Length: 111
Ligand SMILES: [Zn+2]
Image (cartoon, rainbow, N blue to C red; front, side):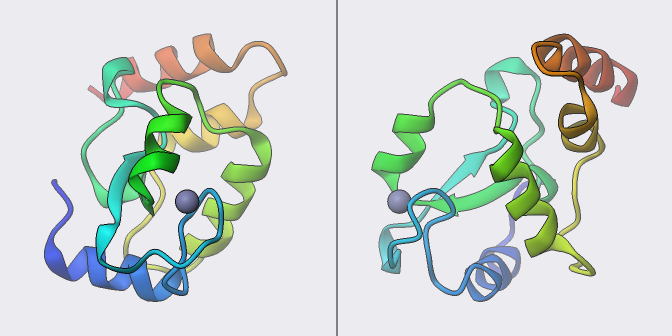
């Protein structure tokens, strides 16, 4: 389900009003960044979305989140109703270098 205004407000509170990537104050210019990019099957749902500056979102582009980003995301979402999309756990637990194939498998199992 797409991110609702309520979800976005909660995300903003949980991120302390800061960009997920650079930790700078984000204000009104926040964009939704999909941790697993939509181009690779990432869902448009709060469980796969963080708030980021437009420039940070663009800089991230079409890569998968790295280990540090995933750890940060899981910490933010601990006991949050916004949740964590299953394939993100699979990517975190994948062997180094196997993240893409693990992500593709996990995403296909979600459908
Ligand atoms: Zn930023």
